[in-house]
Length: 173
Image (spheres, rainbow, N blue to C red):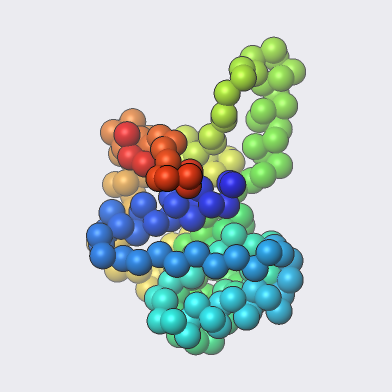
């Protein structure tokens, strides 16, 4: 469920830049199977994808290195993965899962937790942020990334849960 929402959020961001972008989602069924990760990356690349955004654990380096070997771009996840494949990784969606758990645990400790969904975004940069930006990105793209982050922090760009048929999605408010 959470990975599906991240994929939908990635699609929303891509379509905000180019409405004709097609996002293809592929599941390996195993966050740690290196062979499956590489196989999935090769299959996606063979269909002509330009960028791969993974949601993997131990299989992540294989996907990123395969993207680099095949000359396409990638977006890292969980940690700043630019060094794993420096010619491929444009940036990373850095998430401190332990920090998120500690954040909610602290709410519980202080009797402040409510029966609601907690989404910890870039307003909590110690938990969620972008990794380093690859130097291959043009300056105007880097500026657009910064402007978009500032719009989000100022509350000018907000998101909400929505659905399309039976699929959960993320939409712009």
